[in-house]
Length: 423
Image 1 (spheres, one colour):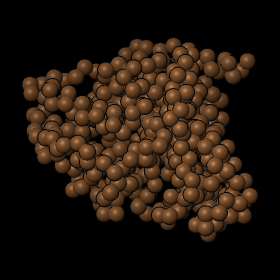
Image 2 (cartoon, helix red, strand yellow; image 1 turned 30 degrees about the vertical axis):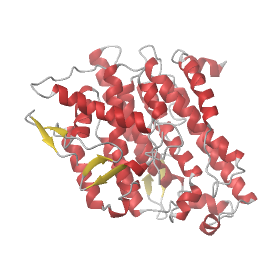
Image 3 (cartoon, rainbow, N blue to C red; image 1 turned 180 degrees about the vertical axis):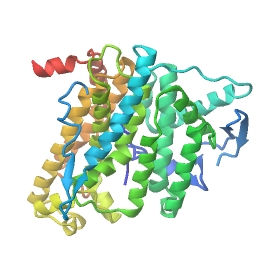
Image 4 (tube, rainbow, N blue to C red; image 1 turned 120 degrees about the vertical axis):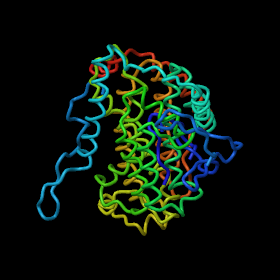
């Protein structure tokens, strides 16, 4: 199953399969080390805890606070016990991320403080090369978003490239060429490696870029760990009983990217939105993108024996797994798809308000990604809801139209969208 990189990428690249999606064919993971399929091998660096450089081989917006953040905070299980819903679990993470940024803002003034690089003898040029490698990956696999990142400050764009690359490598573990050989133990090792890089002990050059990034911005490790948990879910789970279960999966594999990226992209100094609400919007965009992936890829996933649709809602529509595998477009299927598309659009609408609260230089690439991704839903409708044998995609002509639209929209001052909506 393709996952989405939230604020980050254009459609029709298999995301990693948000911000967009990536094709996994040219990024191979093996033996715990990464190599680029189309790129020549190079030496990569590891910045050790002793700061020595070693070479290794290559391989809100202001919303009603309860309107969106929690759809149903508490639910009862069959035994009558009260359990916390997925929305509440995810919201607890949102609160933590927002608190980190707010603490940074209180100590640094109007904007997130970017700490200067720690320049030690011998490591500056290698760290620069590490970020350059991340830039190359982003430029090759997320072209539209990459162009947008060039509008950001040098520090911010480098950090976003590093986060993008880590997310892509993580997705490749379960969605790449070697996915059939990946075990839970391999994901445990990947998580241990993540903890090391957050402690300043990166394993290779690409890790070194992210390790440096997390020292400069208030980026927390939890969303990164949660993304790995999403990969674990893909290894053990192929059916989702209800939307609560699916929501948690969408958060793990896509919503996490927004939480990783907001501290880097920054909130506009003149925004009147709460930090919490902006994080909620980032989460909404990840959920929207992943739901769009799921609706677009129904046929492809079914051929792999996977169904990422709420089982209870299928049953309510008079459908079953057998109907999905049969791949026939019926009136029941059209009605079911209409309700699923409506839900995805709701998340996109919530996300768009929050995008307008980001720093000016970050709005355009994120908004462009949102507008392009949302159009995939239009294309599913244009295909008469046949997502079994037809792949919905946005044409180049529509992309060209969307980019200037996104740029113009990104110039609107923060919180003005709220005033417009109330008018």
